[in-house]
Amino acid sequence: MPLETLDRSPPPLFNQGPSALTRLMFFGALALLLMAFDARLQVMQPLRAAVAAVLYPVQWLALQPVQAMQAGVGYLTDLKTARKTEEAARRQLAAQSQRAGQGDLLLLENERLRRLLDLRQRLTVPAVAAQVLYDATDPFSRRVVIDKGQIHGIEPGSPVMDEAGVLGQVTRVYPFVSEITLLVDRDQVIPVINARTGQRSVAYGGTAPRANLLELRYLPITEDVREGDELLTSGIDGVYPSGLPVARVSAVGKSGDSSFAHVQCAPLAQMQGVTYVMVLQPVTGPRRLAGMQAPASDALASAPAPVPAAVAATAAASQAVEAASQAAQAAARPAAQAATRSARAASRAARARRSAGARP
Image (cartoon, rainbow, N blue to C red; front, side):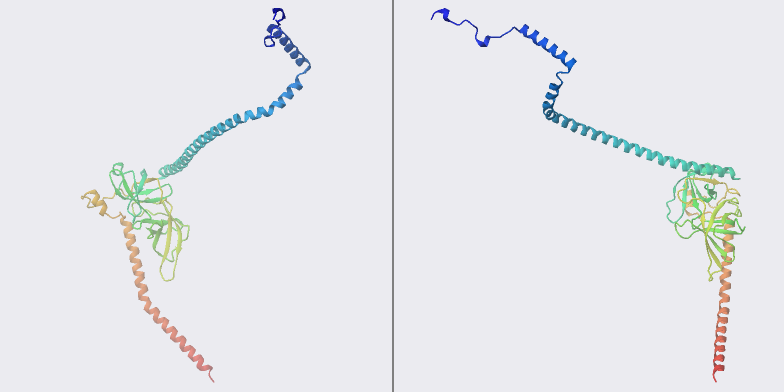
């Protein structure tokens, strides 16, 4: 085959058309032209909107896994933050509740201390402030222990008050602590005077356990006693200063089969939960108990609660009065029975005469 007959044109695969530089310049100019027209005339806005509408579902489907992951991570983060916030709020609430309780307690103690301070300024006898440590372990008595003892000048028999009235009497004194028998103890007595009538009597601790009541025993039923009468210390025992508030009459019972009234009184002092007290010096000075040579524990364990001599004498006199009254009642009972029998016989005789006169 002759060589002149061969086609010397390049194959289509290697036919590259215009050069790369020419195409770059063409398309660059076209891009600049389109940008200028789009900036001036907004010619590409419809095409752009159409493309965005076509591609929106694809974009939404592609973003769903990402948004789900972000939502899960956000939920876990918010849950952890909420738990931490709740724990912090609970701790803060507990601390605030504790501070609020302490504030109320401090206000109450402050009020009681103010009253005790005012009471100390009004008292005419020396007094020592003390704090109640705990109640005595004896379940059959009403006693408390304070933080002042013999080294602080506390003496046996000293009266004890709180901000409202007489609380009790010091019955046992140790070097660093002392024991107080409350007025409502069944073995405790205190001479009192009715502030309204001026009548003197003796108040005894109630016989009912944990009743927190006082009783006025051996009081004649003719005595003028009313509910609400305030009882003050009379001062005749030489221990309690006169005029200290003791109790208020809460109930007065009178029955025909007894010569004495049953009078119950509510103490003005706080018999339960008292915190601060005032220990007064006895009016006649310290009591010296005989027979204290034995060890303090044995002597104090066997020694009864100190009762003033005047109170004991008053109680003995009241018991004598009661015995005399009972004897008088026993002596008058046969005469009353005989008079009753005679009256009944006379009544029967009168009815018999009336019935006999009524017959024809």
